[in-house]
Length: 67
Image (cartoon, rainbow, N blue to C red; front, side):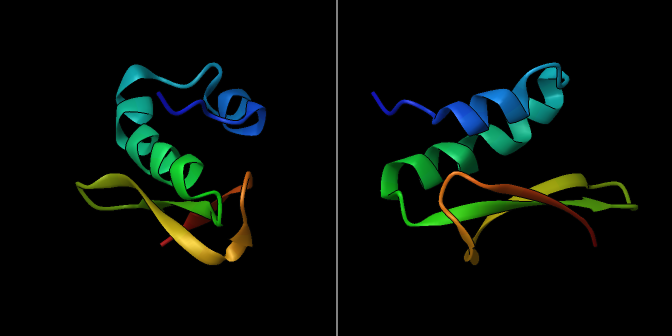
């Protein structure tokens, strides 16, 4: 099983279950390939948060952004 790096675990600490369920699959993908970090975007519409791998972000780093 893939283990999330400490930085990702710390990022998830204290977040709501729905938020974790949204971003965790992308964090797991990042942890599996160990090449890219994750960008979490907040969309003001009904979709809320979205996460995706970002090749400009180093592995183990999460950046929040407003879309």
